[in-house]
Length: 211
Image 1 (cartoon, rainbow, N blue to C red):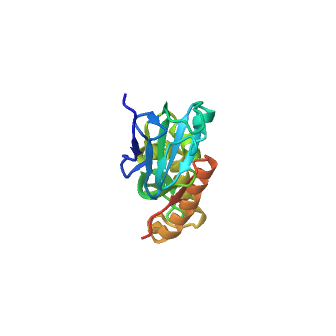
Image 2 (cartoon, rainbow, N blue to C red):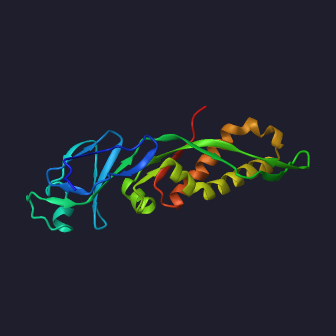
Image 3 (tube, helix red, strand yellow):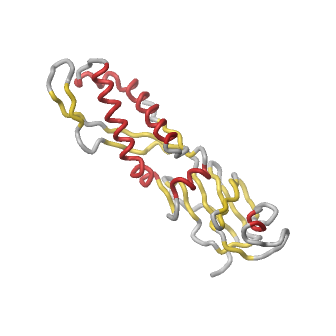
């Protein structure tokens, strides 16, 4: 396989982490990183980076792992094998969620059982790129919003159900009136989901779109 002279992002807008498809690099390969991205060079489990926006030449001076992990002499010019990972740090505000089954609740005002469904959207932004790669990405070649949503679905839906039930029961508010409290309920759910991200060490932020 030919040695790659130029490495740059080719992931889609909803991709959070993407691995360049070739690992045939050299000490003259140019790494191009766009705004709101970070890149890492990875070999034998050792990460070098992050590399911020700009053009970076993959020399031994810029990448210590070339001498430590690969054994290239400092200042030497040679092909080598390593992965390049890009992380997209732009906030994605179009992650959709919904309760797969109705939530069964006792309406505190009318004393009848009602079935409640909920849906909406949230946003995520990667704040610690290296830990995100280490914790979630693993051996896949890319990690997108759909993958993250599937990964978090169980924990998120549990917190969302609990939050809705607590809002109705603690305030003794009829289910029919819950729509009047959407702003405060959204803020509480945002805080709960953010706590889930931190507890899981996902190192992302959670946002809810402003109405």
